[in-house]
Length: 497
Ligand code: GLU
Image 1 (cartoon, protein in one colour):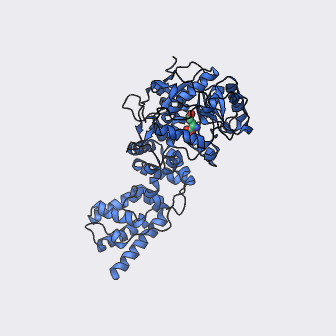
Image 2 (spheres, rainbow, N blue to C red):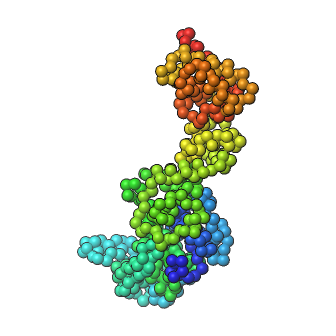
Image 3 (tube, rainbow, N blue to C red):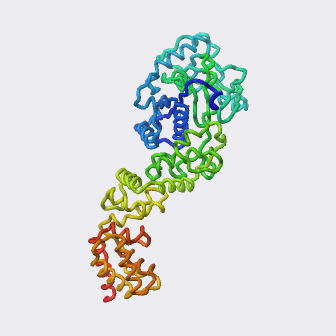
């Protein structure tokens, strides 16, 4: 056994999405494990589109897969627009390959054509239910007919079923779950070619995994029940069985499968909420795995070095949003001002903040970023903190200006004094602003919180804001003075009313 993998072939892993909607985090976690494993063993990461269920196909779904992988930086080697020697990588473009393989099975007495009508199948199921039969499914009616072993053509309009062995076991050493065994007799002769001539998932995926020389199949545990079928198809062709790793489902805190009713489930929604790709990767890897039970923040390089799929817990892991928020906050905090400025800038270009009347410049953001980075759990939260800097109008009431234990006259005085003091400033930078305002606080012998609270409200319309002196510097002399004048006017009107 090499590096905990059973197979010693070149490592080739595949992510095989069906284009049925926005990629769920659970699917993308599979892609992430594939990518890490390919990187770790200098192997290949293939993306194969499994679109054999034409009814469930959703336009644009492949682009969403692409955007999700690209956002997380999970670059792939073959498929999804990238040529390779094992293509095509879209199943609907491989129909002739499946046809050739199904006829090989038919001619070797391993599959047969089935002409049973849906009504007959329903009748069989009904009888099985009524007699509480241990075996539920197709009864093998067409298996007995010699003529059904003749070459299949799409124009036959029938389905093709795999001839499941009626005894023995299908067994495999799963990398996450160890030995798994199924009794063959409990599994019906399942369909491998549907009446529309398309293969079923079971058939197409086994053929492709073999022809694409996939050495390890990582997939969700919901596919576990398909395993005996897949093992038997491999054996019918006399092919080596690749490694399998069935990874646990991601659960919501209520221990049911994470779904839309629990909030965001697609990676692109997390992107929109303002999570960083590196936080997302770190978080997803820790669902059911850890380096030493303690270390939470792990760099991508370390993940590649240390991740071992055989150490993954086989039981479902809970998606703890608080932990993701904490982790994201940690990654935001670690960015340099210019890195964070660039990230925020790009984020807002893609998702323009509703409350901004104009977009911050990257240069401005370099000054603001360090002021707020400690407080952010997501990029989206930055909007609320700094919106006042990018609005044409802010709104508040006179009562908002008056701080606890203060009154309207004192508030009036704070604004008047600040106006005079800041108006005369030579240099409008945070140090000079701070010095002048602190001098005023001393002169007036008032509590700094009371004084600065009024100035903060007058210039931002917010009870909390990033550090005030730096905010005023960014706001600039003209805007600050104008805002203070407006506040002065409002108070005087109220006093004289
Ligand atoms: N097309 C399947 C899916 O979308 C892939 C299952 C597998 O990886 O074998 O879940």
